[in-house]
Length: 208
Image (cartoon, one colour):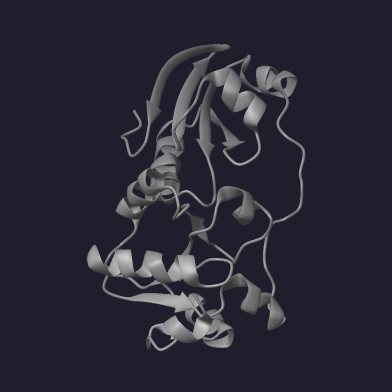
């Protein structure tokens, strides 16, 4: 699908307009590429859901606010156009698409985040961090919509439980630890006491 076909929509905007829009308060930025594409570089504060993976996409848009603007993009435009159409049909009031996708964004000389490989949390380091005291393991990712919903819940839990230490595990890169823990859902919360798991919760939950 060419850009000319879908750029007729008034909600499809050029990179400079898109950049201005995502700086507004309350705006949700949504990357509908694959996780591998996202990890190679993405827009600031972007959440992610693979549009080609129906179950993942449908689950993650549940955690977006339908009344607040959603700025959506992909690599070149077709996937975000299809995603935007689906979101409008689902009741999202204001979905704005990036004309030409991330390719056009880069061609305009605008910056992206990510794309730098950082070391994983090793199993040895993980074991050392959870071996003493109370530790809340928080498996999450910046691109995960329900994880963002849980951030204030985690903050409130830690405030109410001052003796609990937080250990964040990155759902994008700490794959060895995640596999060892048997975690398959983001976010996942596991409380350790003196090196032993005492409870585990997943998704949008109360922490107590």
